[in-house]
Image (cartoon, rainbow, N blue to C red; front, side, top):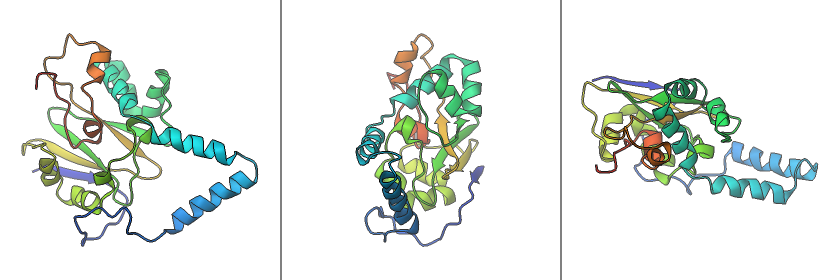
Length: 215
């Protein structure tokens, strides 16, 4: 069995299987974030209304932006290479704002399946695939995906054969990941717009795979 994980965070070993979204104390970083936002508003760098509008824009982001990138990569090998090397730069080619935090593309192949986690919190390319689902932020997913990725994938209905190398990528505040799913078979005649409809949020996290329309 081949399993690899790439991460810089330390993580514990005793985690309940329930989401821990509302039961945590206010952290140092949350306090600092709120204090910095208040200071920037006070200094006139931006207004409270502009801050609210930006937060609202982020909250309404949908997976369609990431799906468009994947569909282009499926149709254009040269673009795929650029997407793997620099998601932000490749997105800019399509007039898609991927944000300022670097994002790296990781491609699923016949031999490799990638899955993304953030073991500390919920670092995630929101600008491309929308808000992270609750399960992505839960302790269970954050801890178990590193320790037993095949079992976690199976719980999502994604069974990985033993000859597939499962690689776990740990997102951080400084680097995010976007999974490039395998292109489904039988889609050779589909347009880029049609292909984009096959790409889901979960397939870009890596807990599921992209499927053909008749699957």
